[in-house]
Length: 385
Image (tube, rainbow, N blue to C red; front, side):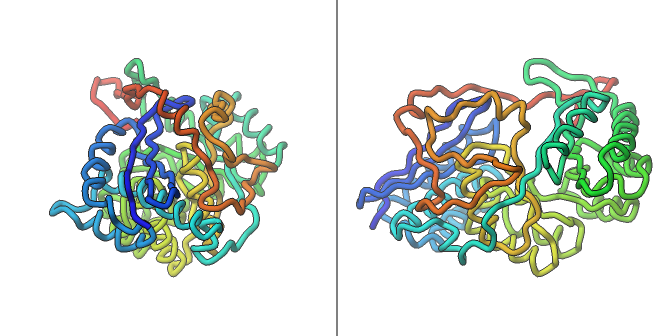
């Protein structure tokens, strides 16, 4: 079997662009992957065009060898654009391998260790009474883990001014009340979208009574290990870090030093399933559970579930907030989309990763330029979204 073509489809589907990649073979089998570099999809497509030139004619079942060649095939190796492109190709190759053997990918990764995958839901309400009521309704519906968004999420069509110190105070007050309302058995976390400094993150944590939060996600940028070490000394709240990491080497110091307590592996950015399984194994060796990052499309979810099924050290799987999920009707573009039932995903047994793509419908979609919201401090300077 040989690769005959690689096609990239950066298209607006549902409420966002998806960057879908199809790998075709001379035996009629094909696989689909997805890239996760949101808002820079055309950069990913450019990388895929380069990779296509030397991958045509390769045996698609030599997945590890292809991963190494793609990653090391340029002098300046790695980086989010290249690994996002590699991720999509890698997922598609695993999809082909599963279809060729008529087995789900998780069988090729060692077999499933669980039949269902626990999920966590996210509230994107403002940090006030409306958020508290929504989280209480989530708990009443059976959700065991609930995450809050960072607060004001901004808008892509205007600049949003955010007073970080006021936001910290309001969020801390809401969390104190929320914990009292939902009790101790529900796992609560918050994604701070790496918008805080060390001092701001420490101040936020110090405003919370012990055991208010079960995890603090991405409070600061991950690039400075010294900054995270400083913050670690100033709070005992468990950290959930890693969605920014684009390969095993970037994950290694976070895991080895114990700076993350939950590994936020993004299968569509970290280098696909090949790399994700290695990161998960390294996390297992340090008694760290995997908490996948998955805000993307059905192929990302399906591929992530293959990993989640096959590893022992798993905590909970991200799903998009209900308000976003309810807006999407993906049946025109995809078949066998994973769906949440009783706060879990069932592990399927369809060949490959299980999701089928209506290529004609996808090809008819257009690409929309989209920018992440721009956030400014009151003095006019920019901060992270």
